[in-house]
Image (cartoon, rainbow, N blue to C red; front, side, top):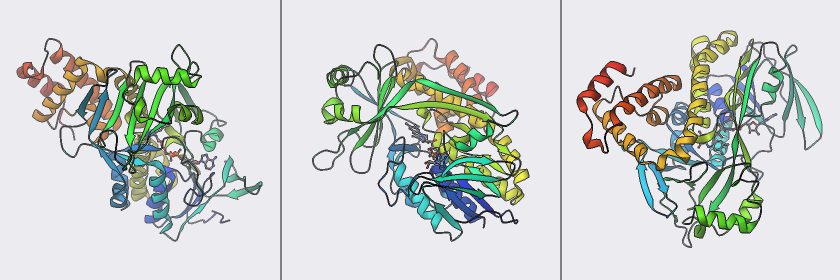
Length: 457
Ligand SMILES: Cc1cc2nc3c(=O)[nH]c(=O)nc-3n(C[C@H](O)[C@H](O)[C@H](O)COP(=O)(O)OP(=O)(O)OC[C@H]3O[C@@H](n4cnc5c(N)ncnc54)[C@H](O)[C@@H]3O)c2cc1C
């Protein structure tokens, strides 16, 4: 096992070879930094394991930017399926399609978590100075002595590893964050939703065809809960039910195959015939929980930094957790460009650039749950969407819908949040007495937008 005590500061130890850790390894290698990555799980390229959590996910502009910067964008996008909008499924089985943006290029992409993770690891390993160490679970970090504790489940062996600089990309349950909570004045807030999630499947048709529209993110919004489905390359869809843990209709009460089937037939009738293994999957697949974590400071001197979900886990309703973690890598890379490997300068600057923004996307993600499960089916909401697109068309540098600012631009999340609030107020004023976008008072719109929304930089 390699130790990481180079005095040159050009060796970095990463904990976690998930999405952020694997991308960061490439960024660092491109800067000539030697990287050792310690990962709890076996190598998913050799052993058939679940990549954990969601099977597929939405990749958008911020994540794509990171992939472009490290030169792996084309390879990844070849494995992605564009989703151009939301396909809403009513209880009666009526379909309505709502584009995500007004431009052709404004779409999000469905990508397999495992494929993406493996491609990033493969790319990282093209650099001779990147080494992955699998089955290495970090169990502690002695900050004073800069020493990591690692445990190998396959050999039942514990190791203590001296490290120089360490970056924790070990996800929402970060072992390094846990160590940091023992330090004086470490702030931590952790909030679990009362909803959990369960993944289910719509397999491909007999000839491998997609049984629902391929280029859409499907949503069955039902007020306090929802089902969504994202397409996979093999023609299948991965569905996710976001549902209360407890209550009248909940994971607790759907406790027999009959109850599951009758509930799905009543609520998602058009999905049921497409889900031949519904009841089996419902009881075989785990129920995941959803957490928002905010903490600070993210670093200890030049010794350790939290990045990605380890620093800021968010709920998945804006499809931004991974995109945000990739953007973390982009910002850290900028700081390295500015300060070389002077981590004492890099870490505080990195945190000051990111913290307000990751707090903002955490809050927006929570708000978006209500929008997705409830408001998207509402006529007022759809009218506001139409008005938003009309305003964006007329004032492209001033009025950009919040979803677009987050998903199709790299405007800092905190700015997107603030501008989004102002835009909501403008929409309130413009939409209160109209039924369709044709009735929009353009004079009023003009004065509100010019007065309240400065040009986006
Ligand atoms: C249901 C669901 C759907 C989602 N959908 C989307 C989406 O559509 N778009 C999007 O952008 N984001 C989405 N996300 C969020 C996204 O999954 C995360 O934000 C992203 O995975 C964060 O990357 P990460 O590398 O920080 O953490 P992870 O991907 O969780 O990687 C952490 C890695 O560290 C390893 N590890 C953990 N503990 C240790 C330890 N003690 N020692 C060594 N290794 C360790 C893990 O095995 C793992 O490999 C979703 C999340 C959920 C739960």
